[in-house]
Length: 263
Image 1 (cartoon, rainbow, N blue to C red):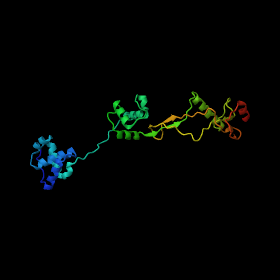
Image 2: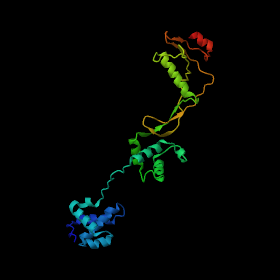
Image 3: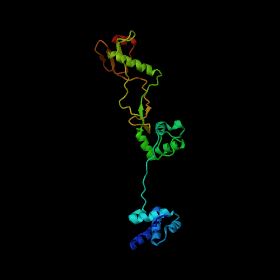
Image 4: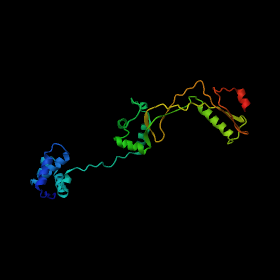
């Protein structure tokens, strides 16, 4: 049998305050219900009968009366707490990161950039996670070193043999610097030609997207100069000091005979 709980004696001021809370049309429903329980208890109504009137449980009614006896009106106001944040498993975190770093259009979505709301809806719809808030998603991505960054433009060769040519150039650099012994078919002089674009070349805006921290996603820049650019010619030899040819006022064109004479 539950212990008998009775409300302490309340003053006229406390009674009037309880009446104002009950008659108020605005405010917290929880506060209104608790004030109603205390007011009925002040009329010496038993907890079982109060539970029938307010459609609650007798144990809950006794708890409200006990809390009011101990804390006064502070017991009428709810103390909401956020609770423990939801945790995600390692596979879930990896899947969220992979999708955030991907392109939405590649997953059949009619937009080009993930927002927190769109990404959260997609993750729940695809069953990656059961539920996730926008703030929880932002914190998860931050813990995975993913942030919302502006895209950067860059230049990249469309030559299919780019990698092979790049490796050959690096090999010639190593020979010129004396880091590698030249082979039987390697030259004794290395001629470096470089096309230098204008200094005021501005990157093309590409919007924003989720990317690893300090590693923004990059888009290819459009830079085409079919008529060439004037620039210096640097000849580096393994046995002699380098010689520098002054800048030409016009685009520089060299034939194999000129290169042989320079070497």
